[in-house]
Length: 126
Image (cartoon, rainbow, N blue to C red):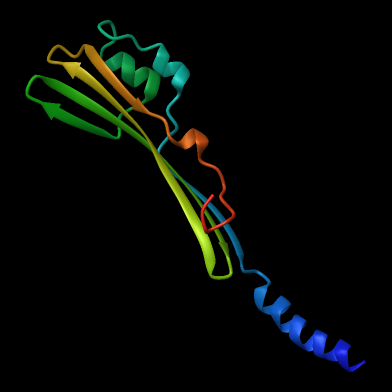
């Protein structure tokens, strides 16, 4: 009987203290970039209006001496906490559309990292 009480008195406070201490949180900033729409945009043929119609307005417009850069960004963050141990994974998708002085698309640079971002439940590495 004594061992049950000791077990109950040691385990019950741990259960009560740990209840509600698991935390999952997902956060996104911006709109995901549609690769299907991105493939329909052709170098040398598309202009700023065509790009805006397919992808929406850019997050940032960077003027250059001989053209313009449209910058699109999408951020995804996943957070997991268990008591005081946790991990946050954050990745960005970045798209740079470079236009010449006439407004014709000359180059596009795309980085797609959020596709593989998952929930990492173990805070000490993979």
